[in-house]
Amino acid sequence: MNFIYQKITDLIIEKLKQGVVPWQKTWKTAYPQNLISGLRYNGINIMLLGMQDYESNQWLSFKQCRDIRGSIIKDEKASLVVFWKPIVDISQKENDVDELSADIHFLLRYYYVFNIAQCNIPEDVLKNRNIMSTNPKIIEAEQIIQRYHNPPEIIFNNIISNPRYKPRNDIIEIQSIENFQSSNDYYASLFHELVHSTGAKQRLARRGIIDKIQFGTENYSKEELVAEIGASYLCNISGIQKTIDNHASYIQNWLQALNSDNRMILIAASQAQKACDYILSTNNQKEVE
Image (cartoon, rainbow, N blue to C red; front, side, top):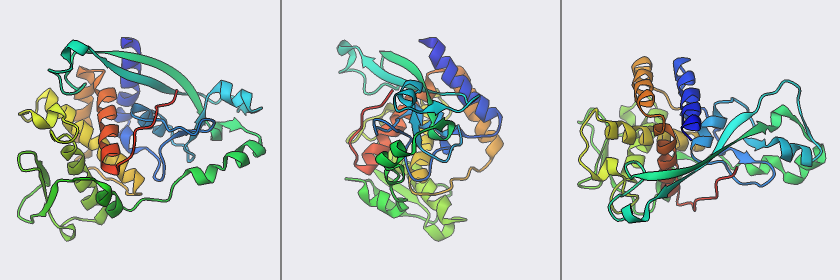
């Protein structure tokens, strides 16, 4: 199992070394989806497939392609996806809040899929599945905020230097939109804090929020990674181009964190997915293989 943890972490690290932040390389209008089943790929798979840079969000396995009388274009390479599920020891459930810190085991399998751009697929198959209609319209950022059920209070404070979520009071403090360089920067910052807020005790109860976490510690890095990935998911769903300040130092921080724990990226991506689903008030769909 450690092999696949390391394989995924190495893929992420390779992109970071190239100056690419993988969790920002997802589609603007839809999560990646399986062409045949219609189910979406969740968690770390959003990142793994998003790194491949195809315009379509539709994927299928070699067997699925063959079953619909299609073929893979010569020399095209498959992309890795995983089915990953934490299995918590029942005896520890009462003492551990979430998989970021619980003593748990994992069920992990990996598979390979192809984007439809890499395949020759019969036109009648594509037409019957109505590919264009699977991509929802771009969701405006304000609509995402409004969908957040029982959200924290958002307070506009132009005195503070950086936006912040305050768990004790369950409030987000952020500068008003005109104080940001762009609307995109404003919503990216607000989404980051909204993802943090899902970790509150009355919501998803993540240890990175409900425990006292010191700046610079491993748990702090985990929670920041959850918020960063979750904000990027929400930005892509709403069509926002997210930018990064101090790009080089930012990437170095993640390289150091990922090198120290090869499970961190899978766990953080899973937590980010849960946070986004909570904000969007969507039911978790079964993760496809």
